[in-house]
Length: 73
Length: 321
Image (cartoon, rainbow over all chains, first blue to last red; front, side, top):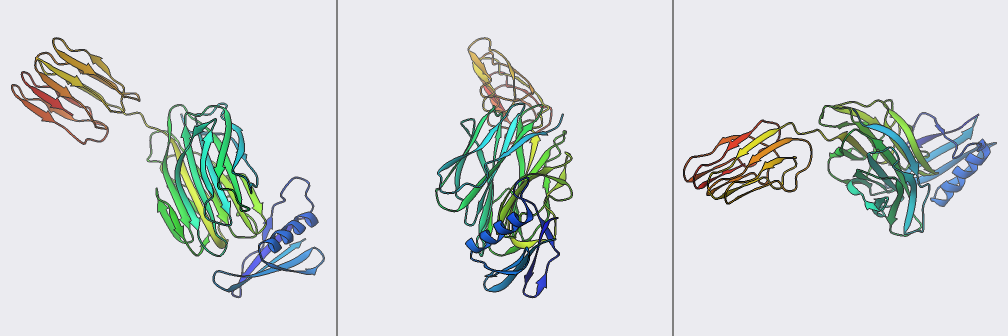
């Protein structure tokens, strides 16, 4: 099991990338929760989209909408 | 011999403090390198000490917009075991320090530093600009000193997680500040010349990178012989980065070898009589045969690796290198 994310900017989507746990033994749910908390703190709009899955959106680089999808497989 | 990796440490996330420690390193090490990353603004670090000795700030990379951040590199040769401490301007913004201790057979220096922000890359200079950049490795040269060097790199990114180590690199430390991050890597296999170190490709985001080549400072292979003037004069070898042996003057004269370092054969035979043989203010050498009688020979502004000899003036005169 692992946590993944991919990013879409201006309609262009990157490959999915694995997110490393922040410490040994961190569960996927804990890592996803940390990511969601951090994203909110940095001004991203976080929306849950399913079980262990959420998106974060924010205008970046002068107003370009950036969407990040996070999930656990 | 070659430069080698000994150990690394990280401070972890640091905010609302004016100083913080990275850890204790230095056992079995010759030199140390530190990167400080600021997650969310221009650099907040103001200095680094290694066992209470100030490290030299090399260069910085600063991403100035959207999700700004910065990386700055510090270097110190001849380290001793002790605590590495970062001073910073206190604020709620996160900084993190990464350190590595480095083994070597002789004195080391940071030969080349690459700084990169978005698509702008500079060599031995700061980079500060806006925009996003593509992640990847960068080439860092060590000047081919004769022994293998090791390259180190650190990036800051606004991506959702720190970018992984690149093909030629080994991850050492990282801080994932959720929507910001940084990672510290080293070159996996040491070598000479222009070689790659850094991070995986494929992430385009806010990006600031600093990469440094740490090498063993090459010994200067040089023999300089200065035979001083005869008469009243002086043979001087001041202010040069070579070791030397001086044969003192006979008569009224002076042979001095002040402020020299490193491993080079140097011989000065001082003046006899009135005259001077001077070897000041140079980094290495050439050949000069001084005039006889009243005169001087000058060989200024040489730079490295020839086998020089200066035979100084006889009579009233000087030989200057």
